[in-house]
Length: 248
Image (cartoon, rainbow, N blue to C red):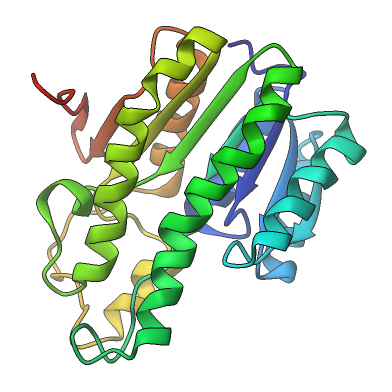
């Protein structure tokens, strides 16, 4: 896909991977909707894009609320005329206390943000993409979805589900809608910095980290390469490869 002139929506676009991806897509010529529960962060991302000569708009979106996802996509249509690229990127960890001590409401929100929002965002975006003759959806999963993450099994479970959902959506390429996901290792983001404050979730101090811009490069690769559908791109320091498809 030629990104120039396309309309992209990025959830969790107020910081980290979402901000880096929004800026990168705008640099490639996309008009970007930056959606985040942190409205100030979303506005800062828009300012970064506009200062670089790009086009963007912000909308406060809590992806755990179905009505907010609907409003986000309607905003893209009304503000920029349609939708071509959706990056289901928003994600959270379980926090303290962790599973199995976490209360139901606490880990239910992790399921809602990390998984239900991906399923619903994809479902609601498909008719919009079809009206444009096709498009791309990229999910942010994680290496934790492939190898697990004992400090936060709920987070790992949601990311594993996103990978299998992605594989299962490969047939939509026949409608010119390509759905893929990115699986980064540790990334230097505010979410990781918060995890470092938790004795339970704390990543190893020697964990090699990616910068968000490196993950954004992977997202752009998935958007630009028309041959890719239903794939999970693994990215870590010195690593960029695709997870095997089921049955391989």
